[in-house]
Image (cartoon, rainbow over all chains, first blue to last red; front, side, top):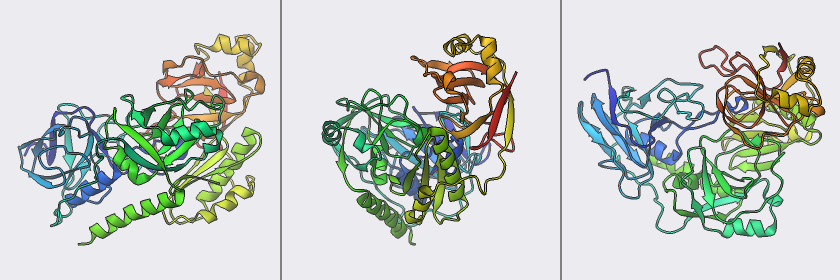
Length: 306
Length: 202
């Protein structure tokens, strides 16, 4: 074992970053929350290797990394089909090389390591904030030659260590959403178009937001709007009339009108689909969205029992 | 009060933006100190406060903070900052001429002004400062710059802002400061907090 327990990055993959459940509580200083796009995958992958759900792990995007273990590591991938055994715990022995390559159609996944990735806590989180270049591993995506330390495992992987997450099927992916605080600023035609259109996910999408192509929703004055705090899943409409779904690394404030808010559980699903796919918004009430969120938490609580 | 997420609420304040912002800042401070269960974050902005919670947060407790306009009764005296600025911004001449002044006359007026940190956003440590007279309100630039130098003091609409890091930006550049607005190595990583008072000096 060279250089302590951890792994060496032999190939970094397209966009591999260290993420946890985000940097909460610093919004009034302009600090983005960041964190895993697929929170459910992070929690599940961590649980599979015996970690706390909020432990830091790798977020893989499109092409996964190739890593060489230093010390024996338990590894679990959740969210998308990357690597030799997604949804299961894999023991990677000291010196062994593991390729976390994406299966066809896989977009994004979380790779968790028993013990959790050992990078400094910055403002209470180990997440990478790419836009402001801090947190995670040196504030950036992983590069070839990086060595990431892994904490000693606090618990062995649980016995029933296997899990799968719902995957988007073929065709249009339905995202449940409730009306946003500015919905009334859009005329009836724009509102109808928003809920009816199959929106295409553009390749310009990133960890800040998912850009959608479709008909222009016209629009209302945006130039001199006052900034408001933003939330994960908010669908705002830019000056050219196109929607953006705000994701983990959104700025803390924004001035575009908000037409809808995507249910938290469906944001996890959104992390598992690629640009080029189509999504449609299905209107639900905020009460229904809250029930979905509570059911998602309850699922975690049930499966957490020994 | 509007729903901004499953467990997120947006409180709004009416009136002129600077007054609405003061009400928002006071409400945010009051919410933080109210001992509410399940509170995750409180984000004041131009005329709103975003309250982020967990399922334990009782939204009926929030309504009172929106209904009652709060004055600075309990607030400690504001922190004051003096920021030295080198007036070498690429847009200084244009800012001055659009305000009907020579660059020197504009700067002479500018350093007399006292600003208030209304809120932070856009990037870590980026503060929106109120206190610019109407005659100095300028629109954003038509085409944003792909990289504004770190420390740039800039104007847009009713705001003065300072870019903590080099980022793209569409504001009008007045000058530069060497002060760090966001420094994770410092004991206090953020120079400004909402409610702080700021003056610029040559």
